[in-house]
Length: 254
Length: 254
Image 1 (cartoon, helix red, strand yellow):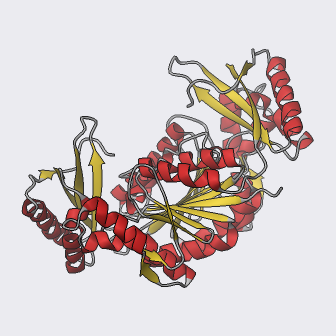
Image 2 (cartoon, one colour):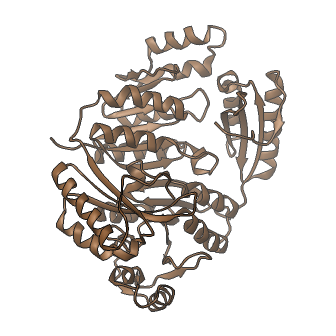
Image 3 (cartoon, rainbow over the protein chains, first blue to last red):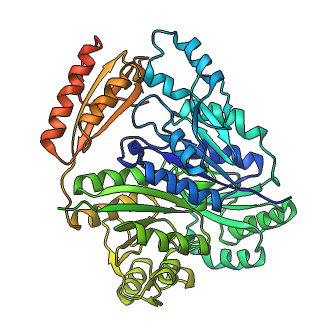
């Protein structure tokens, strides 16, 4: 079973200007982990047509699956759908079921020209349903176009990702200990990493709100028995440094 | 005065796995805004040598200035400095002042092989000083390599960005109003945008913790008098929709 990789394009000037904090990467990353798909890159790009088209074109060549968020609302800077159509070389057409649905929800009077634009989808697109809004997300080929608003993005991820083909399940083992410093055991960890080339070993310093600092050690990979072996050696490494290993992640992260 | 653009590379599996939330984009974006430099793209990439080298090489061609964060600690997955050296075709050498500084701070006994690696910088690199740690950030050409830990990243941004050449100052005017919905005035806003092609007009729906929802309208650009004119038309647009325009941004963002 081959693992697929994915890329997320976060489209919007408001992230790049520092106005808004991206909250969608984490939600997608976790849903993909559960599905056995690896999020391998995220790009945050501005509402500029050339920039979006070039990025979509490049990323479709490099990654198995592309997700986007942002730019599907009614305003002039919501240009994601038309950029996707151009990048894929298909026309932008009025998607009749989406048009009807939006008109019903908003009422004829409020369904003005700006809002009608939201029903223009690339030819061949399939809407992504979501439980909480009528926002017109859609899938076309390996590209999945979603809303930028975090609650709607999360609802679209919930309806889309669990339907995708499952990859091999990722397993992980975590141990952490107070007082441990990355640099104290980095040489040992490097040797351990050489011993388990197929497993990702990571170390993450943390600081708790009560002032305790320490480091978490994590083994992660697709070979469950190798992850288990590496995890028990991480436990022993913490013991060897005179600390008490605690199973799992620390309650708060730095 | 030409405006320079910038790209941030966030290097680290822990963001892509959903373990850690990026906090550095916003800090850099705001510092660059103040300096008149535009953050035009952010890429989050994994701790994989080929991926880092390819990304650095591409982005150096496309953007005026590159910032990186992450991967400069003592562990085996901290490979940013060696990847930058490879991307730029220079050797990685022991940087004597950095070596001495780290040894003094950590003490000879704790300054083990893993920590000594932190003093290996690309030939020609200049350290980025920061007020709160000895973490070995450095600049080489148009590439600025910084720590991933948010407090250290922010300290490095503070010491580096205000020293960079200033671009034209960005000015902005914001108005917001409760009860306003993006789709209600998107057609008017589009016409306004056509009238001010050099100014960025944006609309940002918000929800306050007390349950109030509304939209903020923002005019932003480098021509201060055009921004002012566009801003006063945004004010009038809100009035025309029967809402009370309030100056500035809403207190909380959705």
